[in-house]
Image (tube, rainbow, N blue to C red):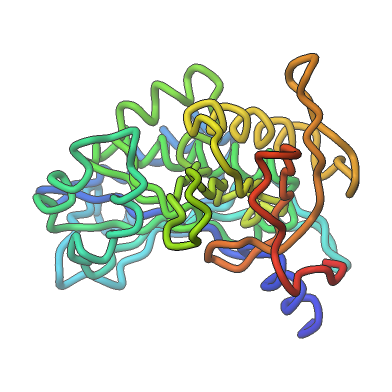
Length: 304
């Protein structure tokens, strides 16, 4: 078991998936509405505390400092995971957590090209909920993310939040933009972040950049990265996004040495490596060839 957990850590896999919902005002959760929304978006549920809530007359849960440990737990019977001892439903939990200040999300804000008001909104928020999955890591990546997306949608539609932070992709998203993207089929909109870093001080005199995805490895799929000279970052972002969705839909089907190409002239060589930028995880490194490739990593030639 320890060996398996080390392998997962080395890959970048997240055994528990987590998202924070950020609020300007304390969220009010109608538990019965949340239960209905959960069933609408994730299917049949088993909720052990439901009968207790009815008996106690607790229809609404108010998030506040006195109930930091309050927990709502859901068993998703349409998402069964097989174990040696038998099947068990994947689960999600919603809980109050201590609010974290905006400066705790600096790296997410720095890469929030998609939302200009991210920093201002975070500064205005003072309350947080945490949504996590449990016993769901045995699901295939697409099913796991579909379940989590449905649960997140149910929570937001019950108690609309002002910002959503995806821990595994270090991405902050505007809730309505997120739901709009999900409706259009962009299931990775929050779960994956495309990041861009300008590399300076190498003395090459050329425009050097590193672009990568973060978030796929947490689901069990390699992320993608490219370390390059003199290529258009916006076009590179499109290429990495296309490749990430291909891997998400098809799985880790690209072998080392294979080439990808989205145009007739494009033949970019792929290789599994460890990421150049944190967090530590497995990526598929893309070599766009001479004169554009800025160099492969050092000390990363071990098999993953």
